[in-house]
Image (cartoon, rainbow, N blue to C red; front, side, top):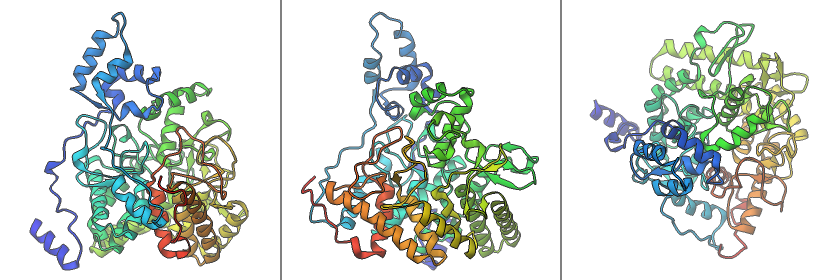
Length: 538
């Protein structure tokens, strides 16, 4: 059977996605740090030994976790016990061996990005034993900064740049890693950490399979089984829902239509943001477990955090993510349904193809009924508990264009609204809410949203607006690169502005999806290709 698969792959000119020997993948400890270390975990996080809550959950134990917990229970009541000293004795910080990287002022922006890929690449042999890191069989690219693991939706935008940089083997490795995650865990976790297993991120694996096929890495049909598994994860419980009920990520609306929401299977503080979540819940008059669930669901959305999910734009404690049916999530699931239909038909599975074609058509009807505002001419999220559309316009309104869900007339109306209300000097604004304290609000802009907007507008012939957003975005990225020799996670959408702020952690350098989107756009628009760092060696 393996020989037949290999020959088939060679006949079509594609690499075999099943050729990897997975026997060398070390076993994962799927217990999260909170479950593994219990009261030790709580004591470390609440005592703020580390300024960043993510530091401890990314540490690796120096011996068996059971022995560490036993030692802690035996020693903690002793006179003079020092918790920080105990942690430093029994855990090592997760660190990849440092690689010297000096920005070369002679490098163009594109060349700078090409030189960053090896710095952001991690290898299976670097996985520490018994840590929260979930081992993967192949090399992968991390975002950078404090994010030293693979992230789901980040990686799609990173892959765009890998393809332009001709990093074909790395692109192939990333493809097989995502197939491995779905086969192993039934879904793609938020990231390859045990504390991320209870949630996913925006489902972009269908988009990845299209990219794999376009670049000749793999046939998209090679991943049909994984696409079906991911779909089952997002639709779990849907078949048994009555009108007005919800289960996990599915909501059955009063009319019988089915749409999806973000969710997390846990309702405790996020382990990587433990102290922050406890403080947020304390500021709410709702039960703490509800706030924790909504914070976790907000993290699954990738927009962590934004006024988009809040009842009060000024208070994160008012977050109600699980009450909201998002336009971007349902657009991406529409694309997933169509991809399963297309690939099933290519494999001669006509009944399956017809079923998923119908599912996509039904979802599109529900999206138009509940998420489209004909009065304003844009898509809005829907609050299924209040039975009404949300009023806050966000960049997610362009996702239906990106997946080719909307009509030409709707796309024209959206383009007008976006130009009037979301266009900023440096690109596409995330929301209309200014200075909420959350990083997914104005004045910040994000690479993935620029890409979705640009491609979506191009799909519907809105080339002028697409080019305008592209030029403004490349302008702010190039400006910071020229001044500081780096790319970052997010940008203030004003030329010559300071660093973007907001959120739970400082601005991160790197940065995977900024590199990927920028590298792709530079290839298509050469006007910024000659930009160089003017700050000398950094």
